[in-house]
Length: 261
Image (cartoon, rainbow, N blue to C red):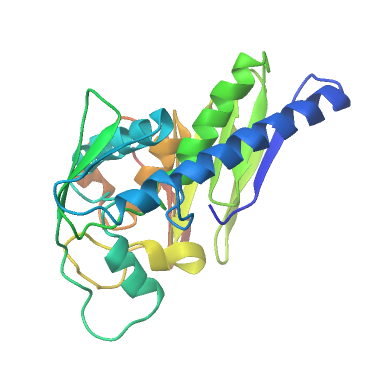
């Protein structure tokens, strides 16, 4: 996932916390082996080379992630689309000319862990959901081990807090910063300064993004991850019903400001 994961676990002896962190990172490695498009035998890499008419059976984790991505494709009005891998590569590698046309069609089966390729051409990229999905899975894993409170982070972009502890975290812009308290919620950030090259509009529009940075909190890390990417494309966040978002911050030329959610 090309990022550094950190865990802060409360109310445990150091040796026990270290052991749980080790087991959690093992779970994370297994998950990355299924979701990374850059690992040759991962589920996502195999989907990306499917031929028309083929059906591929997936792990439970990959199937759950794809169904969640499909759900949020609808919730974001199509702004969040994990099938734009070719367009993302075109942007990241600064290739000349217009991005390639979006071709191909995939069916994610809702009742069984499988994907069918109707026509080849779609390239999946989980950059806007993978870290958040992984943090939600790590939370479930730690709760099963009776961890009462923790702060989980995937780099500087996504953090997830659960339990009774309130965690002070900072949202840091180019020339401004604010401190907030994170409790039983996830915080995610997107921005042109850190990871803007991965944010592409589904219709191929390459106009400048309306915001330098977006931060928001939501009940799950996956939801926060997805919405922070999608909202970078909206000049007015009130264009969508944002019932899942509990707080929202934008950085414009005038600094960081809170917006109504």
